[in-house]
Image (tube, rainbow, N blue to C red; front, side, top):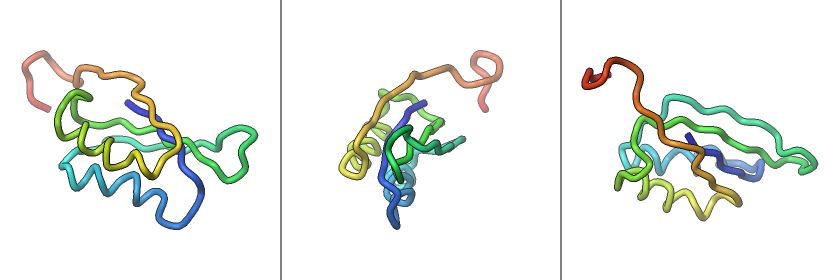
Length: 87
């Protein structure tokens, strides 16, 4: 799970999501919320189906960094389901 802050401008969401696809990182959730006291700025909360330490996620986050003013990893959690059971 991570949060990123971006300005409200054309292509902003595309700039956040296309590096995930390019690095073959699957996203299971995205939610946007306005930043309090900052007109036209939004925080995007994302859940990824990959470990934060993986090369794919590291590459995607590096590619996203120039397009966001804030990027924070909230945590990494085990996948749902029985241990050892593929999702």
